[in-house]
Amino acid sequence: MRKLFYILIFSLVLGGTIIINCTGENKVVPVSDIGKEVICPVTGEKFKITKHTKFVDYQGKRYYFCCPGCDKRFLENPEKYLNIYNADSGAIHRTNEVPGQVQNDKGSENEVSYWTCSMHPSVHSEKPGKCPICGMELIPVYKGTENQINIEEEKVAMLKIRSVPARMEYLVKKIEIPVRVARDEELYLAQQELISASSSADILNATILKLKLMGFSDDEIKIMKAQSYIDESLIFPGPHRAWLIADIYERDISLVKHGQKVIVKFPAYPEKDFVGAIVAIEHRIDPETRRAKARILLKHPMVNLFPDMYGMAGVEIPFGHSLVIPYSSIIDTGERRLVYVEIRPGVYELRNIKTGIETDDYAQVLDGLKEGEMVVIQGNFLLDSQTSLTGGQALLYGSAEEIKKGSEPRIHQH
Image (tube, rainbow, N blue to C red; front, side, top):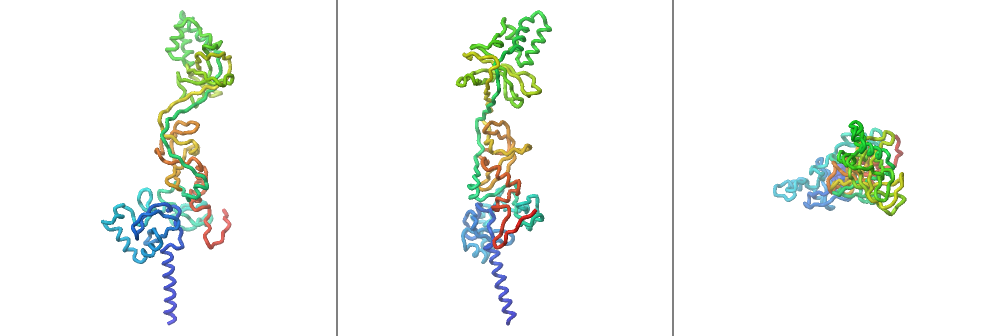
């Protein structure tokens, strides 16, 4: 009789343990599932998972329920509810979704890709367990989410993470070029030789070659040769005509073109804009300054500009409509350019992109993003630091190390 009593007690305890484990009373909803849309196997209603949602692990699969009580009804006869939604006429069946189960972006169930340590992301394990380095519990990384980091919505606001969409903009790049008012004896003498060298073919050819090295075209050289006077404004700039020498940085040479309009500002005349045009760009780079010399002609400056007076010339280069993102969203590693894309609220994916022209505020996107995708412009370096240090999992659990209820915190040692 006593033996029968012990068997009965053991059965009750075992049954209670099974019920607790199946209903998930002591389990926590993974943060990666919160906010996802599923179907309740009992009611057939769609709903979004919260941290308080009940769930049951049955035959190796997880099922979520829309309200308390549905989980208990499900456990009374699981096959009854699963068979309902496997029927050909079921409304839920036509959605190609599995009742109660989380769907990933491709429509299939979330599967664990590997298990890792939040403090040592180099650890990859095919099954759960403890980190061989520090002894912490391993955490799951799901397939298709290896480059993602999950943050609870309240922490997004606390960390001030902000995203904006990639969009099409008319892209204009502005560069500034240092200039000085010329006393251009080199070009003055070249013009003099060109006009007076008609009797000597050798001198004429040498002069033409010199002018070509200065960046003048064949048509401009013909015009110089046809005129009977030398441009004295090359030596004495006046209110009707002045020449400027500009130094173009090597990185900007491909952007600056012959004939481009420039707006020049001089400190001596801070309220006046001088309009000129690039006449010639020399075909050589100064090996010490890494700059190319260009000549700019100002017509009708209307004031006296003194030789060697310094100023800045602004050039605007239009590139038409392009997909752009704020420059602040880009993380430049030297080898790659990365951005964090907001897949949905609280979920961010690390993305490798290819960029083109850059302005002070925007960068042209050539590959890796589509119009409308949200890129993080504030808090991206915080996300990157967490991804680098913890493999994107520390913010998922709220801290680098999870302290379970009822357990004493232990000192972490490396």
